[in-house]
Image 1 (cartoon, rainbow, N blue to C red):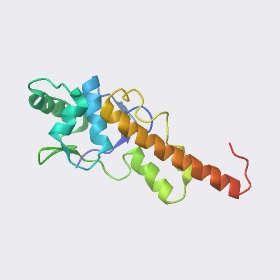
Image 2: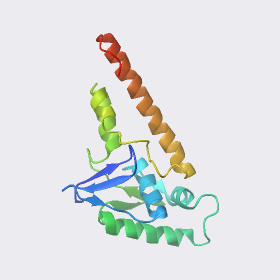
Image 3: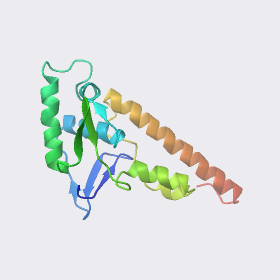
Image 4: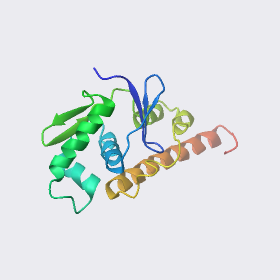
Length: 164
């Protein structure tokens, strides 16, 4: 069983140990790999998709071997049970409540829109949106935030509250 952690995509990429200690994943390529896996938490991501995210359209000749090294470094940082080989790729194991995006969606489903919006710490995937694969993910997350904000404004108006 993996140690409990908190993962954040709703702002800059963050990882926090269960005791509140921030964990740092150093290196741009390693952060891109982690963010890509988190955007598809608990779902397999092919090696080709990960290589495209990390290196773009011109990966190095031995990108598959380099990817395995990066995965190894992530396993060291997060624990070996977190990243599982899955077919031709990898899957990042995230427990319920560990990913801010999952908590955001859960709160929205419960109608707790203001609380859901409070989870945002800035622009989605801030600092990683220059990566084309993550820019599309960040745009989709920002759309979710705008939808939630519209819901909150509509709720406030129907209650006769001033819009803030």
